[in-house]
Image (cartoon, rainbow, N blue to C red):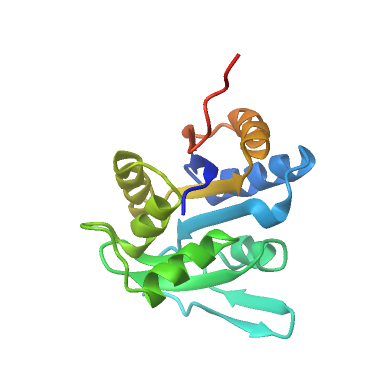
Length: 175
């Protein structure tokens, strides 16, 4: 299932949070935005989340950061990913991870996160870069949508100080 997506890599959770605010201000539908990142030092602190009706609760070292996204972005999950560690996901990208887990479809040599990225139509070399970014405590902000929505998101993301911004799966424009 290939789709059009923009992926931005951020060095800190503050930058990723600010990027989501910029996307919202630019008119990007929050149901199209996802954040993927590691939780820091979960082995040293009690970390978890739970759902109470329509509200997600989270505690841990980055509780305020992640807690703010539970109500904003569509869906959230916490996974212990072999080779990467504890990963939190908020937004529609969660469905791709769950689909990969339920179908036990993990593309050769990729983690479940990598397989989910690959299922979005992201080339394997880019997937590997994104996996390395997550392993090194960086954050991904992913926007999925139509070519027009993703082009608009790309413009907004370029103004946010991302380490990199890439678009995948966009159809070439013909003149």
